[in-house]
Length: 296
Ligand SMILES: Nc1ncnc2c1ncn2[C@@H]1O[C@H](COP(=O)(O)OP(=O)(O)OP(=O)(O)O)[C@@H](O)[C@H]1O
Ligand SMILES: [Mg+2]
Image (cartoon, rainbow, N blue to C red; front, side, top):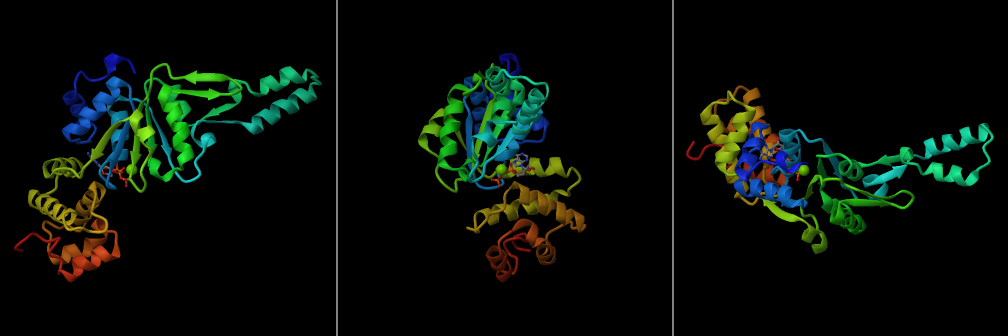
């Protein structure tokens, strides 16, 4: 990305994210801004549903930069993340060569490793697209070995294909690495990155998110949702609701035509806001007092 495409300051960056519906705390805007300026990956950790993945999508949408996403999982390897050779096309090429009676085995072999038979995966695609966003989602699900070659790729924004040489990004993509912290990621990788812990949003910010999604939501209902979600987050639930749950809850309450949260509405919509049986049982045994307005 050319420097002129990056907003002049983090406030402008925050406004650009808001235009596509992503409402970020100041520290998050500053980290994205610095990550762009310093051309360093941004390592984002936080509870589920706080907007780590959505941040990458928002940057992509706000600046119209294509997004390349690599969803991590156990066993993810280089051929899933960097590139793979297209064996079936290589084979076809050989068959055609045989058919036309070519005997120059050596040049034939080198042709098989031509760029046109290389299938780029997310990381290489992002390195070859300027500007772009590279989302490496949920790194904590991948193995240590993956971290090692990610470290190598992100150190120089370059990938070495033994048969072709080194392919280097003309301009580094904006890289977001996310983690749910199911395990610690090595310091060596973190050292390459800027680090951002994303908190649950403040009430004001979550209100902006809800109102953006549901412009016609009655203010008292929005107030009640925000207060209840904040209570649940402070109540030590097994899985506190994230922003996705707040939005689902609002969507469900509106679909039921609710204008306020009574124990009846709370019971009918419980599964949209709490996804663990134990958490639900706690709320039910407390007669929904965590969900309904205090004093109601
Ligand atoms: N700051 C925000 N502004 C607007 N919407 C947001 C924001 N953060 C999250 N959301 C909404 O919440 C949903 C959940 O966010 P997201 O999937 O990015 O969370 P996550 O942190 O990646 O969660 P997980 O760890 O479970 O993958 C998004 O689809 C988006 O609709
Ligand atoms: Mg995510």
